[in-house]
Image (tube, rainbow, N blue to C red; front, side, top):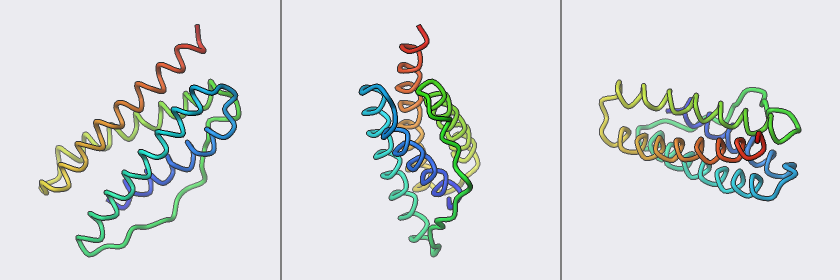
Length: 127
């Protein structure tokens, strides 16, 4: 769960930074709103970690923001969501803790929605 927590930190940081520099209002606002969702995911995961006697780790890798152009940023954000979706799917299948599974399923549903939102914005600029 700590790896999931750190992945949510990284997504939050990437999305907040990208929202600041995105040249178009709609993708920026959507990215900002999704960053808030990712922060909420961090909170849920931290609660699970602490409840089980752990401490949430804050160390993260060097961040890749997808560049400074809207196309690259949205592509990176879609890739992050896709990676996270696959990880959560695998964890849900392999974990034997119903509380954790419930939280991960809820997060998974939101991550799928995030990816859809980013894809819709990418399609608009790719046309």
